[in-house]
Structures are given as structure tokens and as C-alpha cells.
Length: 109
Length: 112
Image 1 (cartoon, rainbow over the protein chains, first blue to last red):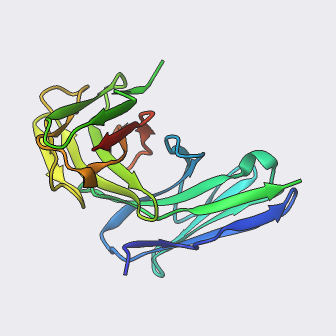
Image 2 (image 1 turned 180 degrees about the vertical axis):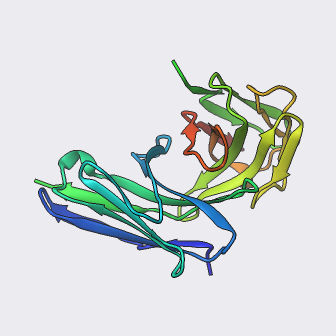
């Protein structure tokens, strides 16, 4: 079983749709959590950090459930420019960093 | 401009010929890390460094070496490259592990 597992996707949604991605992790020593987006094998770019209290950045909302070891990302009012691969990342304080395999989103007109 | 700079961007080399991929950051970040990305396997951590002269193995360290003699640089060394090291490599840095990373633009390595 992988340490970080994401919905395999792909997700194909129309513009304006709401889409949710899920991620689970197995290492209970994990302390920091992030969502990145990656376009066409370019470098990943930080989308947002994820906190237990939940955090929102415009159309994006991230949530962390430490008890269930579960992370989510919600995208509202999807835009064509949201088409990308979304990566869930889990870090320990010791420096170990584990990426999920990513979920591909395609937003269609 | 705050950035992580990797060189070269593309490299084709032959089996057994030692090579170094450089990584430099100008943000005074403590933490740096190397990843490789392969189709179907996602990004996997090769080595990381919490500070100068401190390096640790990630999930796939075999066949790689690193050094952290100064804070800004974290080169990745392949002493004897093999075809199974053909991959897309990314260097990343952050203030510390609780912060998000800034990635370099990647190095596409082919070993023939």
C-alpha cells in the first residue's frame, strides 16, 4: 500500500462545476500537508497548505482530518485554466516528503 | 527574483559516465530536496538536506550522491549512471519542512 494515495481520476468536468479530490496518508508521523498543481510535466507549484481548521483561497478549499488521515481539496466554479494534475504532499518534521501519484483534472467548455 | 535554478535542463549521456546536476536557491532556505518523476510512479524523494552538511536518504537513494557544503547549493551526483536513472529530476527548497516548496524547472536526463 502506498504511503499517500489519491483518487486516480481522471476527472472531466464542465466549466463552472464543483470538483473534490481526496487523499489519504498512512504515516502517523506526518506533520505538514500541501496541495500542488503540475502542468504537463513542468515543475509542481504550491497551491495551498492544508490545516486542521480548514483553509480557503478564493475558489479553493482544503481540509485535513488528522484522525482519519485524510486530506481533501474542493474547487468551486471550475475554470478552463484549472486543468492540471493535482498532487497531494505529506511531510514529516524530519524532512521526509511523500507525494501522491496525482489526480488529473480536465475542465471542458 | 526568488528562484531555484537547476542545470542542465536536458542531458543525454552514456552509461557509466559520471555527471552532476546542479541546484541553487537564492532564498536562504534551510531545506533542500531532490526528486525524480517517472510515469506511473509520481514524484519520489531521492535525498534531502535539513541544513548545511546535513543530508539524508529519501525513498530512492541508490545510485545517487548529494552534498550540502553551502546553504544555497545542493548538487545531485550520479557516479555511474545507468539507463534506469533516465527520468525527470526536480530540485526543491523551502524555509523548513512545514513550508511549501519552490521547485526548479526540472532536468530531463536520458542515459543510453
